[in-house]
Length: 629
Image (cartoon, rainbow, N blue to C red; front, side, top):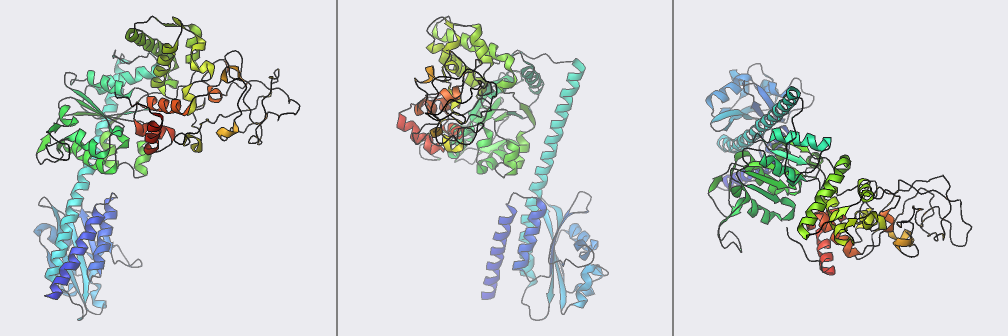
């Protein structure tokens, strides 16, 4: 009785270890090899082998344990084809007490048991899933008269392992077939798009409300979504933050046959995982504290229509598995419920994250990536469509006039200044710039000097230089601590002499590395007398650079004058550089980051390079009231 209980405990422990291996997100070959290796620790066996068959009945995957590296031949040669055929045909376990005397093993590498001290026995079971044999699981063991084992217990253990392996192989084959189908569908759609464009010359870009632009990159995107909208294929919108992914998703819905049905959207980065599950799938009454009534999720609300999952790259690994089932099967259960619901939803996903890199790092499931990346559409940043800046600026100004009952206009010089800006925040940053300037404008015509760029107060300079590079990581983290943040500005020497500025600011001790060294920290930047309006970036003259490397110290003779550096910043066309002339408070920087990210704390924290907890503390510290959209 005690021995039987001990054997049961060992078998249970073995099943537990094998189940852990089969849940790992690795290739099927590695999973099966790990299973056989674990079996060798729980069974008194000489050789172990798992053989997975293809559609024609030939070995597709062979995983072994106990096979000597210097042995002749291949591991599969130790298992005769006749044995595999019998296990597949009968779908029942098989036991051979001595393979040396069994005609099935005659002439095979496995009949080498005659050279061993003892009798070699063979045990094999079929690997099945849905009453279909997918392969075989076999072991060899040597009995020298002293070993203690029972065939019935070992067959029971092998049958349980084979059942787990069969389900795992079935799921892997389903995913592989699903992935291939999606790849084929994507190729066919791309081919259809190319053929139609070639046959019709160019598909006229559809007129979509809310999307402003006549540049070639925008027209190409509109032409693509006009064709994609006709089908129900999943679309992945990719692009930088602020490029209008939600507008283009709405355009796909409006151009599709589902336009009369609901268009539902959800920002996956704005909610924690527990709330996100309830938002997407809904919940039953009493499912958790506060669930006073039954609530339909976004999938149910979007039935027959389109669902936009924004920031899809930010969901956790555990929630990715839950979402994958809905996308594959089109069915789910509400939180706290057991009734399966089926929905018909056209899915559009959006992200500014590099999903390929996330998959390589194991942060994003590869199977989910292939599921949502059926038709990728890349949205161009604003810097690649400078011809649309004027159209967008006037559209935003017209909207501001309608909302506030004003009749503002913008001058030509002011428009030229906007066209020279880099706009790392893309269309969203341009809209904020227009609204801020229109709100503070003193006359009916917005002039060049009304923009923050002209006075060195451009909010974009807090985190970006004129060339789109981030400020140093040790500086952006200073925000939550209440210290100033000064971005890095790459400076290049300009040998052309110009009249020397007067007065010359004092050189700081930190600037001793040569004329091309950047400012390393906020403490390395010297303040200019009189503030921004009278400093080197004032609106009345070109910039000669701040107190930085290459400026002589106080009391020394002035060095050779140098020209204004036109590459210092692209935010101002007249040579002004907002990155060095900004005098914004920490609260202003915080508010700007929140506005640029749609008041999503998690995204603002990533933008500033700090944690969500730190940004929450900073919001409380400065009494910033959250805005809800």
